[in-house]
Image (tube, rainbow, N blue to C red):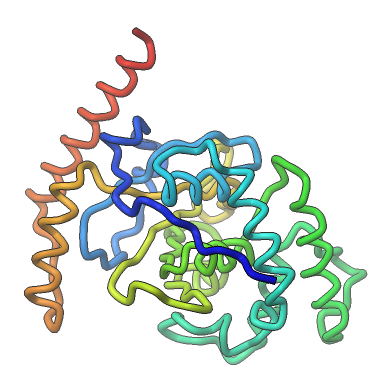
Length: 266
């Protein structure tokens, strides 16, 4: 079966997409994310299609192709199931890979995991949880998780930084805060960003749980190009983002969001 790669525009920005900065997610953005250019979380529809919406915006500049992205994720997970149940592949990108079987953790994070019933020591059970989830996400507006972000990385053929805030269970963050590598990597230097966030406001910092992944994009094409030029020039050195640069970009992002809101109401 031949699946043609996504022919997408990699220059999606806040300005040209019309999206707005997600201020609630900005407030929980962690301070240990290394980026080659400054990005900001943007709001997407919180209706169970967050990952397909994010993939559509990253690929096509808008969320109108979320159904195609969902279909591609399903096909990817079906055709290459062995990759997404392979321990070494799932641990790739972790700074400190855990000694335990990370597939078990991913299975427990799935809403298809039945606590007290599913025996995770059984490889067949892990596979069944994985396959039940793939079958479930065929339905529109069905929530996706970490396995689907792995598949999205392969669909877009780009690395994806799965950003997890410094909230909730520290062990969950160790599993989910990582750079995800696609099966086939077309662009070695390019990284896309998706962050775990929540629409709930009734949780404490220690008992925080995500329910909505959102994407992060730059403000303008010019600022991204400028940052990439700096990254290429100093690619063998650690680059620290200056506070004034970040603040300037944030001002640009919030201004762009205000203009996008104004255009939407006119």
